[in-house]
Length: 298
Image 1: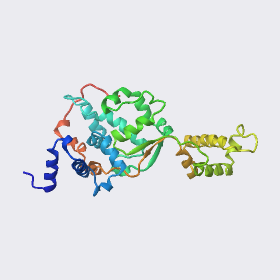
Image 2 (image 1 turned 90 degrees about the vertical axis):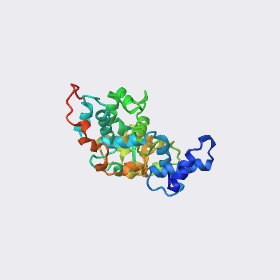
Image 3 (image 1 turned 60 degrees about the horizontal axis):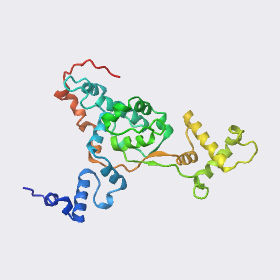
Image 4 (image 1 turned 120 degrees about the vertical axis):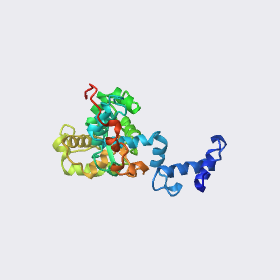
């Protein structure tokens, strides 16, 4: 018998067929379910767009929490699953872990520290992904990753990896993010983006020193300056040099994945590393005394 009034009300509404429930009843069930899964929800006003997307877009949220925990699994534990003579590779910890390790390098997330607390607001550009080990790993093991993560890798991945990166970010790792499109360079609406940059690059004499063939005369048309400034930013990135504020603002016009500052506080994400169900399996009988089954690592 249910004695809690709230649980009783929830159970009562759940007994009603979905097609027969009122909008108010459905809204109540939805709100209570979100409250159950996320921290900090006191009223419907607390449900942000990030929480909505996380709630509706990720079918298996517990699996995204497991993927974060796999990141902190020791290599030996991952291999015990891979070498398990009864069910080798049952959990795909080795394969998943290798992909997740490389993904976390892109976001600068470190091991042995709470995963959720390390997610910072950031912009990940195509050139960032193309230069990463994660990108090369996905190309090499595309078929295997399709199978174990059940997330389709598009045919255009090699030339345009951001769409899959965004899906991997959200649906595999539970990280709230947005894939932004390039903004058009309307001189009237985007002056604040390019004028400070042009001023800076003129002051540093970038156009005259490094783009003489583009500017044979001391005249600097905006279209040509935009192209050269864009190229100069790429050269600085290749050299590992820090971009100025104006250069970062200009670069933000490019297509990129924006990692949100406000991340959904899904309750399992907030638990301590020591409380991880996967890490606790290190001492379980399932993985004790397993012998190598003859398979070797890639």
